Amino acid sequence: MRSDKDEHHENEEEAAALNDEAVPLFGSVPISVLILFSVFAGIELLLLGGEYGLWGGPLAVGWRSELIQLFGFSDVLFDRMIVSGEFNFEWFYRLFTYPFVAGDFRQVIVGLVLIIGAGKYMAERVLFRTLVIYVLVCVVIGAVAFGVLIDEEQLLSGSYSIGFGLLGYYVYRQYVKARRGDITYFEAFRIPAFIVTLDFTFSFLFGAPWFGVARVAALLAGFAMSLAISWRGTFSWSTLQHRLGRR
Image (tube, rainbow, N blue to C red; front, side, top):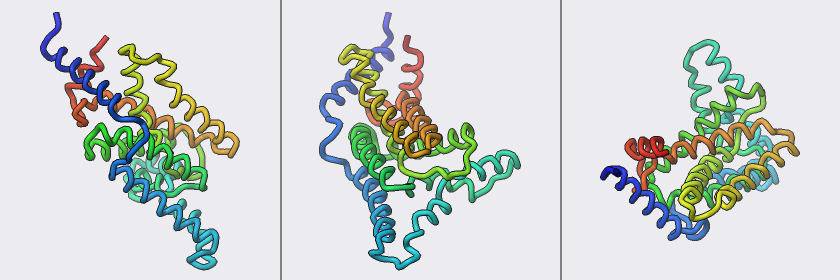
């Protein structure tokens, strides 16, 4: 016999499914996503202008590499802190700053497309504070996974972790719809599988396959956190308990 609590959560899932039907993946973009897009696009335009000699003088050519050295996530510093057991601010702030500087223009384009598409999808379904916490956790998880699993001196950079983290929410919602029988599992995972496959292909072609670890980790973190997001757009402990307990 179903309890009132189970019925309540089923009603939440129904409301979430209806909400998915009401809001398409692409369309008008919420202001929070536009702000995030503007920050990344603005930084890249500044760096591109410097590289093409539009401003900054001769030194502007090296702005990108200097910023990556300053804000990119360092596996070397991460390992050093773990071994020493001492907190190091120079390592810590890089957990949050590495997405803001991309290694090349291709990273920027792919990252911005994901942020606009998946970010819009999520921003229209959750509260702003939920979105902020979600993005920060995905970024940190992506960096930590890179630091733990990869032994590489090249600095992690680029907004991919944000884009893939946001994609994790989309993947979860599509999974829910497939579980309900509204769509097939192939339809649910077709777009994410294509994006991940394309990302790994380009990563291998451009000689940086290890960066994919951070992106996949961010996607999985986003998927996991989505279990705790209720139809009201907030993190909910009761929602998480219900979904984990459902057979």
